[in-house]
Image 1 (cartoon, helix red, strand yellow):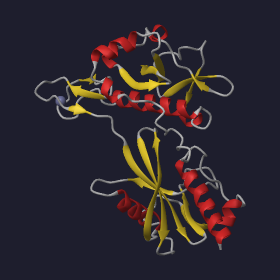
Image 2 (cartoon, rainbow, N blue to C red):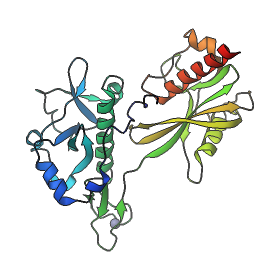
Image 3 (spheres, rainbow, N blue to C red):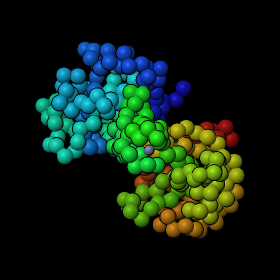
Image 4 (cartoon, rainbow, N blue to C red):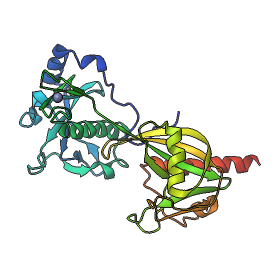
Length: 301
Ligand SMILES: [Zn+2]
């Protein structure tokens, strides 16, 4: 089995059955083994030259911990693991233990299991902060199920809110030995990437692939094959990666989202004629795998 995409990998045993077991949760919270992932604003605490996530004990997070906003992540390396939100209004705490950094930079350097854990913690903390009030009646909401859902406090409403992920497609479109890449005007000069966009209501992901590629580049796509997915926690996307085969080749930037889109040959990419996305992104993995796929085909020919 291939290594999972960065941030993915199911390294946390989510132990869904424990979420509604208050006795187990209370014991876990108080246990010496409990570990807490601090999220300050949207940043994560790390230490060391080759950074590792800093996981805290209950005693260390006592000043910040709020049992009404408990966020249970699951079992991590056999320890009950929780997220703890720290208001960004405060000076960065725990300076003696490490430094808070952006997850965007940490994805490439943290051990894979820690990247999975802290991305999960950060996504849930940010979700809770955005769901303090009910979207139907405007009443305050309260965390439940170990912080894996919230409920409106207004008994006449009682709406249950679940953490959301926003599905987005990302696709490398091939035309023989060429692939379709585009760039947005605010990207670093020379950087090109795969076509991507959010799935809209009423669409299958395959429909979304065909629509996004057409809207952005005017290219009609035939076969669409699923590759892999990546939880992309900025803030809550789920990137669904595909290979697709082009049925047309004339590029027109229909919706103006891209500043440029072109066909690039494998040789051009291998020579480094353009910049490619960060190694942590599924976009880069799609490009790398497409290059390898063609290499294999070339060897067979
Ligand atoms: Zn409500």
